[in-house]
Image (tube, rainbow, N blue to C red; front, side, top):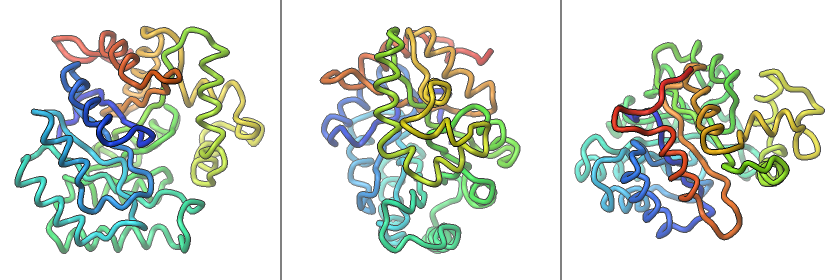
Length: 288
């Protein structure tokens, strides 16, 4: 499935009505994919994805992610088939195990991933129409074997380079959080508030960062300036666009852009500004 180079990654902090409206505008701006952040909600009926597909014309809609602990794979698979029938080849099923701190009874995540994928296989969900949230080497190997590829969240280009080697030719669609704000102090304030709670308290994200060039001092007290700047690039639209393109240069096929907006603003002003930098009639900017 072709996702294009850039997508709009929409945070569940915004309600479903707002995100449907954002998706319509993101498609008009030229984003090729809309990612729907879901957290741990039960989305096995895929009603939000269907609503966004119905409201748009050609953009690919992807779940980011359907949590394997809080969703049943059998009704999920049947919902996938319903969406495929209504909107052929426009839906990508993103699935993953999330993180242990958010799920009671979380154990054996690799076993849960394999059994969930087994159930999707049994229900005839094609492997190339699903993508796995994967950070570590073992999960990335599973993504290469049993899905179109991986959709890693909250990563840096060093992880992207490593993931590309493990995935081979598999699809690597990374999420990239950004702040379109030229004031460094304000941008870091927004980014650090986002990272401190909950991400730098979650073992899977922290351990992944420690594997890719950061130390314990970087991941404490809301994150060092170096870590904050690397995880959440900020600056003018042109500066942020250059930093987003670094993920492509590191080996990503696609970048889903998540905006941390100013209070009361919503993500679209920044997504508009970035579209003007990244998306042209001839296609997205090539990585440097």
